[in-house]
Image 1: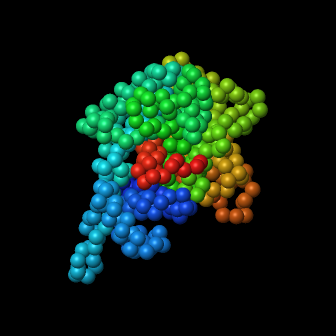
Image 2: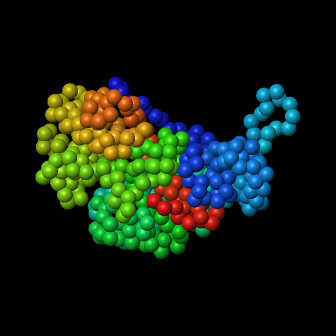
Image 3: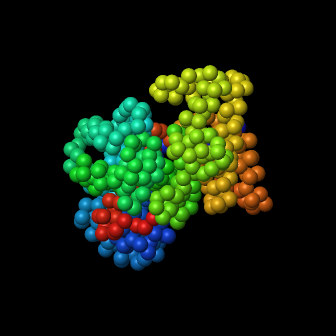
Length: 424
């Protein structure tokens, strides 16, 4: 595949290597030393006390005291470390998180299929579940009923009661104010200005957290993927909509009212195509699933009357493009040019070291062909300087729910160790 981009494949080894941001220097002032020690253990999977002391630049005695407390409280345990090279002396002792001490649920609300994962305190997936649902805009009450059925399936699969869950986090597309748990607008919900976080907490009688789905995907990269070792990066996703997440100094940037990073709704053509947000000329209206389907129905005569046929329609369009159909190729090439515009705007505004492209539509290599990459850089102002790196990330369908679980783990860790919610 001649894309000019690096394809990154994520495997289950990440759970064994630990989870969460590796470089936590920028967050130390806001967290207790107890929490820093715990998060160093979780980030590394297994780590010695000496390494923790060196990483945090604190005395070995302080680390020994804190880890003794965390072991007594059931959060950490000692395990045999890697064998010594000479094969002599006592085996080194490492620390790891006791995974079963706490568990959280992460959920992705979608328009066709909700997904959920149950994750332990070490960040490993214990169980997963999915629920196919009608592709219609719904009242919040209906969505809550669907989530309840999904969670019941999840706990049945895990063989655990819901009382074993310490937190639940949900991601949804649209404009979400994370600070107050309100969905201002979503293409999936009939109502607007919905206090959905509280509604979820009331339904499940459990601490709940709400986030925009693009931010959930970004958290998945920060906790489990290519962003673990980077303090600053951007994630762009192309699926039913076009989303973006930004990590600055190991934290999500959300904006003052939770409306930051709405890449899909930047205007690329005044009075242009109608977007599902109700405005015209948005990037999403030229790049998302429904935009490609609209073009396909016009140029190729492919019917889009049945909403369930959208994935089939897009696959048909892609196959026609691969087989040389000029109309189909033109649709993808046009979408790729709009993607280049969006990516160049990110580079011009933020100058990130890395941009990660993710989402179901990244299977369509026309969207990230070498021409798209070249046009992206031609539209930026830093041609004489090192270019922002652009990677394709390959995940399974549970990545969104895993990102939601990462948020739940982060918030739970803050609660366990006496920290309040960190500022956005």
